[in-house]
Length: 110
Length: 119
Image (cartoon, rainbow over all chains, first blue to last red; front, side):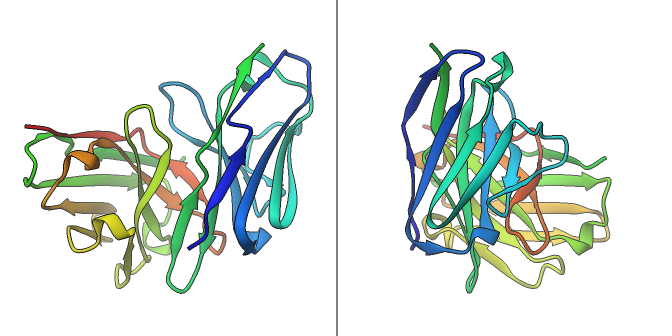
């Protein structure tokens, strides 16, 4: 069973700064099946990144994903006020299909 | 535009049952695997179950195996989650989500339906 550990638990930054969020898998995973989501309070999760580095439809290019093996990163180049939210990474494992979420990183305004 | 609309949530006593539904539109429903993801109050996201496009294969997280049954009616573009033997820890907002083909990520989500298990 793969466990995804996100760090930090909370990240306090100011608008305009750069954010770096980490997702570490308990064993090596395929980057094809690593995704990131944003969830604002009271809202539905939104897919940001799939395949570790591909932006979903309509996602601004200030969001980028990278990584391979066990270490994956979501970067937000210049924080906008609307970017302060919870972020989750997620992995899909096949045979049999299992979907795993990390515990989340809260990005808050400093 | 993809739309997913859940219904069927409510308050139920421990040991009781509920059936959730999710009506889908805006895409070729039978071409996509679908999923239920839940979120307990103030907690993170937890995958519950997934089903293939044909409905032939369904998969479950360990904590709901034997209690929940995920099915679909492709003629009605509707998903169903039959939840039996409900526990207090099943209390959550239940989202249905569309699975990106071949990628295992959830690219569209419904607004969710709240299930509360309490005596």
